[in-house]
Picture 1 (cartoon, rainbow, N blue to C red):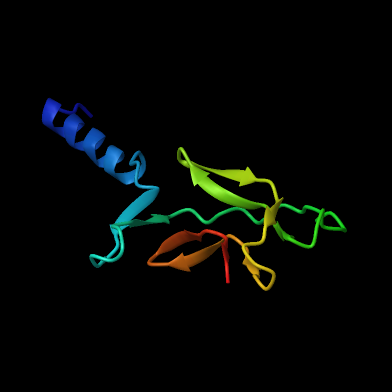
Picture 2: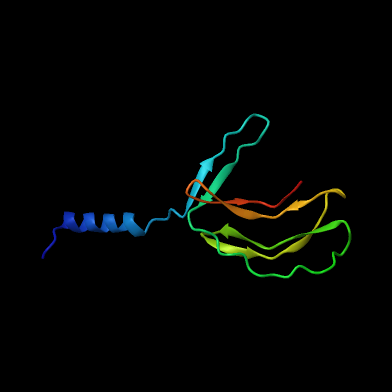
Length: 116
């Protein structure tokens, strides 16, 4: 079967749209107010790998430290492991909420570690 130039172009275009796209990430503008700076929510279509097994050191170097477990971040179209580390507490009663991924809007959104 011979294909003319238009048919070949149509097949190549369809193949490109079907599997060769670079749509691993969706950037969604976040609604802001004048009091809050503009940010974007990045949604990654591919689920993150399961967290790696890592051991938390048994004793903190001081009572003013909290352990931040390792986690995956998404950089340059791939997941990259970030090792756990000790962080300085902002105050004596502060609790650290670990960085994690949440399934949202048809993909995965990274929630950075933070204090509460």
